[in-house]
Amino acid sequence: MNFLVIFETVEGQTRKIADFAVQQISAAGHGVRLFNTQDSLATLSFDGIDGVVLAAPVHERRHPKNFEVLVAASLDELQARPTLLLSVSLKAAFPECIEEAQDYLTEMKLRTGFTPDREGLVAGAVRADSYSYFESQIVQMVVLIGRDVELVDGVREFTDWDALGAEIRGFFKMRAPADD
Image 1 (tube, rainbow, N blue to C red):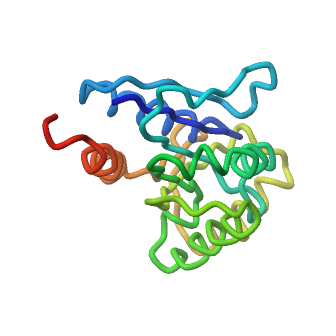
Image 2 (image 1 turned 60 degrees about the vertical axis):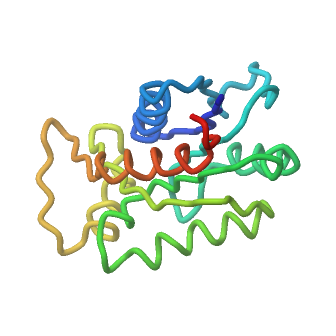
C-alpha cells in the first residue's frame, strides 16, 4: 500500500510528527510520500495513493490557513481514500483541555467540509526560543497557566510518541488488505 502524509508546521513539532508517521509507515513495509503545504512550488498528486495522513498544528485557535485551503480544495481526493487527521496542540496535552482541543478540530472540519475516517488529538510542544515576547506571554499566561513546565534548552515536548505510533499503526493496519 502507498500512503501520503500531508502536513504543515509552524515551530517544527508537527514536522517531527509527520516524519514519525513516515517512519512508522515505512517500517511496516508500505510506500510513503511526504507533502508540506508550505511548499508553494510543489505539486500535490494523489495518484497511486491508498491512504492519507494529515497533520497540522493549532495556533491562535485554528490550523494554518494554507493547510485548510489545501484540505478544502482536495475534498474529492481525500474522500476517495481512507484518511487520518492529526490535530497538534498544547491543549491536547492536558486532560482538562481535551474538549477545547477537540473544538479546534471540529471548527476546522466545519470550515473545510472535510470529515476524516479517523482523527487524533496530538499534544504538541513548547519551543520558547522561537516565540516573540507576546507569544511567550500567551503561552505562559493562557496555555500553561498554573502548570509547572520545565523547559530543557527552551523546549518541552508533550507528544506521546507511543500513543501516536499506535494511532498511526492502527490506521494503516485497518486499511491493509486481508492478505497483507
